[in-house]
Image (spheres, rainbow over the protein chains, first blue to last red):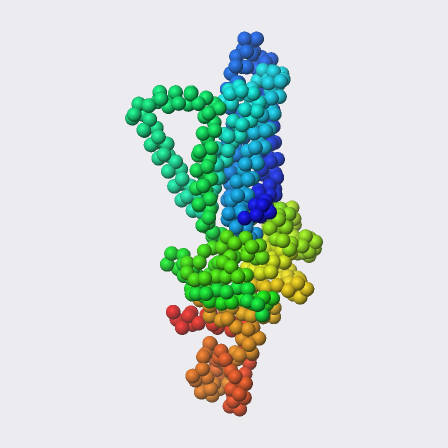
Length: 243
Length: 293
């Protein structure tokens, strides 16, 4: 294991910045522009009451969800895109895996910071001058910009980890790996819901999360993240250039 | 000579298929090896095993004194761009050459740049849009410019035009003369590389059937030509690789003829002709079909 070789795998993911950085930023800017135009239209068309309705309505906006889904897709593809190539360039699977994890961490962190800055700007400018919301939304609480960045980072990490394990399973077992993963995932969910429903514990579950609050609940995402990371490595460890 | 690769009884099974079947061999430093054989003979699988890209089912492999699997110190000294190498979907050749120095400690960017010009490789075209020959050129350039102590070329000639093949040949020869290293060339276009090879490994249906110095191999086999009866009488009891003939004339390829046997053949009024490496390999690996199996 060496920082050099892990760094090489890390950089490989950014060798063509178009895919990982430029294109998503452009799409993100476009989505923002469209939202802003819609807010403007509503502002011009609606009465004062209607405008207020928009302001409270967009505070639950899902417009920024694009970037989470993008990150998921990117993470799914990351390994399939580069694994065979990295193997051809003489990396060990271990260095490659660590470099890939580092690249995803960096992407999550980078996007969380961008997200946090835009949320701050949104609050400062009174919703971009129109009372709209895209970043400072309810899902990430109202505990200030730094805490918001932390929450966004955790959610991003969750999506990235989900993509990472799906990608690793695909590289190892192709479609069968993915199908098996989603089948297992569905069974776990059903089992969890079944247990809660049959033991009549919905209220207790609700109280548990309410008790934790945002600050306690979001870090719980680190549990599936760690599990996905471990399983992803186990899958990749025996993957070959043929598989 | 220093041994840098040692393979001991290595088998690779895919289900019921033995892609590599009980192969033992050793490679020495600073030689050019030809890994020859038909399509699907196991050449690429063997190279995948030597480079730790695949796992052997049985046997031991040592490269630079250690098993190559997950061994960064060993892998760093290898370069193996496979014929069907998969590149990242969004990559152009420039991205390949941009990332190469991160992985190959001896990467020579100026050399790579020169080769790109000589092979007329478009740097800015998506890899997916390259022709077969241009794709081969990417692999050849990585193989040459990485200057790895042990470099594998997997079917480097595929799709390359005659000028580009000659260029590869010339650059490889010139470069290994200046910076000696070990080369393994896998190909089924044997005549093209024949002069380049110092040692020949022929693999057929997963088994290593020839492991010989190239000169010795070329020198040992012969075509015996003459009247059918005289030829048959001469080759009786020898290892016959191939029989051919028209009417009363016969031409028979034998694997080995010692100098005094050559004299004897000439004394018997038979003609001896050389056998090219390609003919020899075709004869050796085509035997099953001829035997009607």
